[in-house]
Length: 484
Image 1 (cartoon, rainbow, N blue to C red):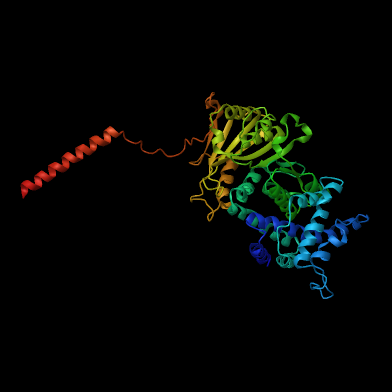
Image 2: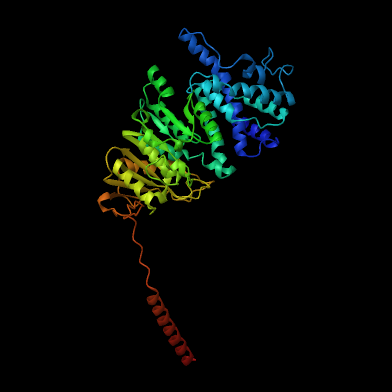
């Protein structure tokens, strides 16, 4: 049922003149879905307050509750058509009253890490693009069918929302940067094995896939006590995101996964001077996939010790600095980082190798990131001890990856099995850092276990053989003529 509801909402958005692409569809679906979720959340929060003996203060004023403006019901529980706004009246209310009211929460909320502040940020960044009040009325009616009454329902909704995020990759180059394949994320998390009580961070959060998957990983494995649940909700997951739409989507994604007031900050991570990062700002676990191919201005580069315009290289410096001593990180990065010969790349590799134990490099196949057209590796490292040996693994799913043939969990299992023993196979090997070229510090994969192919013969030898075959052919023809 939920899948049909999402499809019906997309069909209405497609018909409307105000929504032009998959990016618009998910932005509009997000704000409607968020307000539907709040209608479920209010009574839940009220029950919890009463159990604590507290007087509950509702998040929203009554006139802005879903049940009042979006879906007023009659005594039979059906939409009250006499009270329900529709057509131009509905659009005018949403644009001139509802959105400004919700956006004002950003100014009135007591704490940035509350759901009230998140409401203010979301509705400061989004606008209603549905131009037809009749289309919007139908969208609201479909959204009202979505329920959050059980963990299974919430899990299904979060899964469908993830599917919509993935589909943004089909909407153009900008959409794809929000989505990292979830099987890869889950494998990275399994290697790092985050625990309750540790702080998990992604400074390039996008749609918050790393944080959502890490939440599910810890939630399934921890002891379920009141203190642990409080820690998991409020003091475990932290992220930053620069792009407006990605920030909104990431916030919504975390909320749907069960994190009520995400510690996700709307900011340009790279605008922060890494020299100002203190111990209190550091994290136990960092998981990230910084943007590919971005270029940063000179003033941004001044925030870093190693100056470069390459966005991913600046992010890597930020992550190293933000990691606690003994902390663990898994970072997706273009494979060219391992071999680029420019001064900044060499200096950054040296910094990584000297300050961290880069114990594993996972070489991903082409097509892992649909539409991105780049080859990537995953760097797994721990901060504190210098690198001595690196275990490499070249993932080979045995097929070409692409839009219709995406990476799956089974593909990643071979890597996880081999990682457990650091096995030496045709796909994996260990490199001793004592053998590295001290000038280039080239870390690009050079598999010594690949079966050797027969070397190509030199052209002179091939030509000589061709001439010999020509002579033999000519002799055979002469013999045939003589026989005739």
